[in-house]
Amino acid sequence: MTTQTAQEPITLVIGGTGKTGKRVADGLIAKGQAVRIGSRSSFPAFDWDDEAGWDAALDGVSNIYITYSPDLAMPGAKDAISALVLHARQKGVQRLVLLSGRGEQEAQDCERIVAESGLEWTVVRASWFNQNFSEGAFIDMVLGGAITLPAGDTAEPFVDVDDIADVAVAALSEDRHNGEIYEVTGPRLMTMADIAADLSAATGRDIAFVDVPHEAFIEGLTQSGAPKDVVWMLDYLFSTVLDGRNAHLTNGVERALGRSPKDFAEYARDVATTGAWRVAA
Image (cartoon, rainbow, N blue to C red; front, top):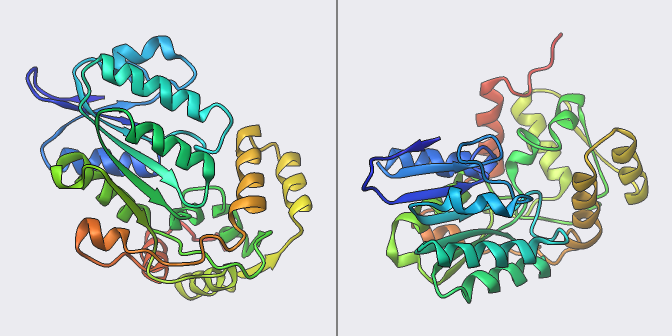
């Protein structure tokens, strides 16, 4: 999907049908900006595995919002980001905004590639998403009444995807964010037990946290038929990133937007009103 006149600069939103990408695209369109969705099903298509098609997706593009699926820690991500930067420079792109992950060395390597591109750039370095529990891998656990994850009592400052998208939209449309790394978190540290308590309060159901051994969790994912890249990503995140390294708050949302980030409890109440977690009687 492209919404533009012939003379308007275009923002390519890679992953424009995903959690952050759809919100970024909608936010830019609401500001009257031209958007091209970058996905395998769009036209022209953007597929990370088909570099030959990238130039068509980049025609006329001034800005790019970059998300790499499923995660910048995946093998091959650095090569893909390097190749995209090269194509972007050759096609006359002016600005890059990269969605990155906290506490991931591979992601920080990709940030460096973007920062050294010679183009205008901003990095949005995010902690774990609230929306993983409503639009992602963990929604079935909420519906089932038990968050069964190998997380122990490690705290994480879960961030709302709406906040991430608002920061990205600002970075794509305002010059003052150039050269900034916005590390974005929610307003408090939360264990999975805290998450379960807030979900219970929002849904009016008893949702428990059950700490499970890492190996059993990964084996269960594999046996369930989860895609290999998703299994790899969750194995990596729970064995490496969720070790306390990110157990501190940052002020990225405040710096970028001049307001506080959304709290998980508010997110949970909002989702509960949509019926997304309603269980049939």
